[in-house]
Structures are given as C-alpha cells and as structure tokens.
Image 1 (cartoon, rainbow, N blue to C red):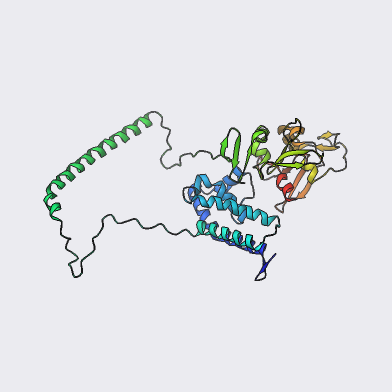
Image 2 (cartoon, rainbow, N blue to C red):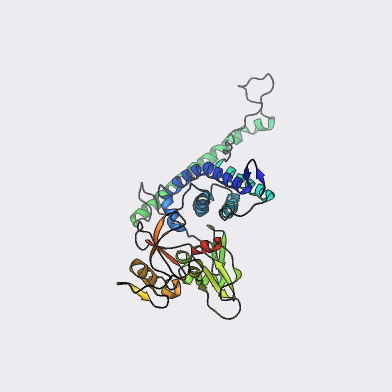
Length: 385
C-alpha cells in the first residue's frame, strides 16, 4: 500500500471520513430536529433496529441520512447525495474490514467523500429572488428620476390598457371573495362533523415510514444497506419474522458451498443467512451460523426451572426460553449450543447471552419487554470472518 506523508491509503480514508462526520453532523442534526423533533434519534434507533446508532461516527451518520432520506432529506438535497451516501457507507465498511486500497482507487474514494461533504455540509446559499420590476438602464447624463419615454403606440393605447387593468383587478377581488367563502364553509362543515384535523397548537400525526423502499410483491429494496431481496428468499424472510428476525440484507443472492458439501443459493442479512439448495428440492431456511461462529460447548446437567435439551445437552430458561418459544423455537432459532454466559460484544460492552444454532440471544436489561431480548447480528459477523 502506498504511503503519503506518513499515512497509508486506509489511514487517509479514515481521516477523510472523520472530517466528513465533523463537518456534516451538526447541520444534519439541526435538520432532523426541525423535521422530526427532539426524539428523532430514539425513533431512528427503533426503526433501524440499531440501538447504538449515533451521528458521531461515519457509519452512524450515513445510516441516519439514508434512514431519513425519504422523510427529510429528499426534499432538501439532490438525488446525488443518496447515491454518494451509499457509496461512502460501502467505503466505511471496507475500511472496517481492513481491506487494501490502491492509489488510484483511494483517489477516487477520497473524491467521493469530498463530494458528499460539499453537498451535505457546504451547500451554496440559494440565489436571491429576481426583482419584481425591471429598472431600465439610465442613459449617460440623464436624470435618474425621469422615466424613459414611452413609444407612440404605447401612449396611444394607454387609456384602454388602464381600463382593462381595472376590470382584471375587479375580477380578482370577486374570485378571492368566493374562495374565502368556500374555505370557511369547508372548515365549518369539518368542525361540525367531529373534524379529523389536528387541534390548534398540536402537530398532526405523520405517516409511519416503512423501512423498505421499492417494495413489490416479489422484490424489496432496503436503502439502509443498499441491497434487495426477492423471490423465494424474500418470501421466507417475510414468513419468518422479516426485519425484526433477520434484519436488512447485506448482500445479494450468491452461491456458496456449505459445510455439508452441497452448493446453496444464500443471502446474508444482518442477523442471519437464508439458504436453499441449488440442486434438488429443499425449503429456504436460516443457516446454522451459531455453529459456524461459536461451536458447541460440553453438555451441562439439567437446571431447575429451565428446559433441558438432550440433543445438545444444554438448558434454556427465563426470558430466553420465552423468546425462543415465541419466535419459532427449534425451526426458527435452533437448539442451544451452550448455557447463558457473559460476553463482551461488538460494541465493547458486556451482556448476558446464549448461543443457538441459528441465533445469539442477548439480554438488554435497560429495554422494556419484548425488546429486552434481542438477536445478535450474526450475518455481519459471518461476513467479517
């Protein structure tokens, strides 16, 4: 990797991403507060299912821009901003995976980050409105208080023009009066019928934004990751919990040879990998990423108050057992691979977790049920390996 002023290419990109965040986060936060209110961040975390989302890093900044694109930013910025945000987020993910960057590619990526920063944080002010009346140029040495002479034809028709203007003004007054009467009539009838409008001084409710854009019966595209799901994999995604269970897609469909030696059509999502055999009949199911990432612990003795699974020799109890039963059980989440344990997760904090064949359950005691039990992002972990 080339070196510029003591910085490698990936360090140059990281520094540029930090500059992007520092420059654009304040105006973006102001626009979000103005459009969505002070609790916009809590809404963003809930709708994206990213509890640690924040504006202080490039990844969070870009995910927030893409989440709020349709509802907030599409009316304020050109479509090029969304395209660049998707591209720069991909750059950020590649940097996080320690990919190598050549000199030519680095120059192109730095230019894209700079373009996005210019559009988000350094927009030129809107041009001033044109004057209502055009002032004719003054002749050299002329009196600025004198009007320019009117052509003879204009002087001859001046009286008729004034009459026409008077008639037009009268017509406008009549039309305005009729419009006011119509508005008052509608307002009165709405109030008499119980009204559906918002009360004075309150904000009218807004429509809930879907996390999915470009949805059709057989295809859904997700702006937060820039990928789409379709066909049989999309049908299985919808039928087994959708965004809450699997998260958004991180890749398109691809073919992979898995541990059983067979080739599958697979697609990685934030919390899972959906797969179906390429040859032969077989249902779409969530892959056993828990076995791939974690393996299985030695068996444990049955525990009081918990359910023991002889097939793997482990117990599940309390909130984890209730969540497991309510979210597909063995078919949806698989069998337990170990007991409850404390682990330091990707955000650097410790949680009580339990690994299953197809999921990792995490207990978040600060959240209210049912959100106190959440699924780990095994799809991301698998892709990062």
